[in-house]
Length: 214
Image (cartoon, rainbow, N blue to C red; front, side, top):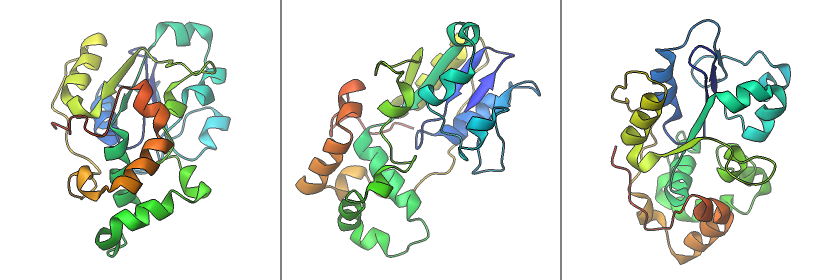
């Protein structure tokens, strides 16, 4: 998460949507009075103890909202990015197993098994996007939702809205795997589709949604 008082924006860092590349681009325009929370590359925390104690930078709308004044919430540009849940799930599983050389040889079976564990389903890297970008009423609560599938275009839209000069996004923290569709059989497709049912509906995705262009 980045909260810029200088440029009046709130960036919700949604897992596995190029958040580190976007953070890096945003940092070029922030100053010492702006806030950031992230722990993977160095450690930075928001000056809000309840949120700092969460221990990661993927703060949700409902977690942040009680700590932000109505004036800031109503006037700052709030945005985040989403990704096809079927693609996101494969990327997440390969990232979590990046030090497990045997994972790729049995990826489908291990992904099916992982979804049977509630502890895995509750991991912040796995949680549905709809739980991060919606308010108490269950509706999307940010001003703009970009898409990983057209990342550069969405990024340019954000920077145009903020009146900042855009730049080409670098590739950061990329999971190494084949095209996501290659890992799915009907059983895994059903399991992932059920788990991310709200994301698929809310952000208009399906299994065949266009693959990333970046």
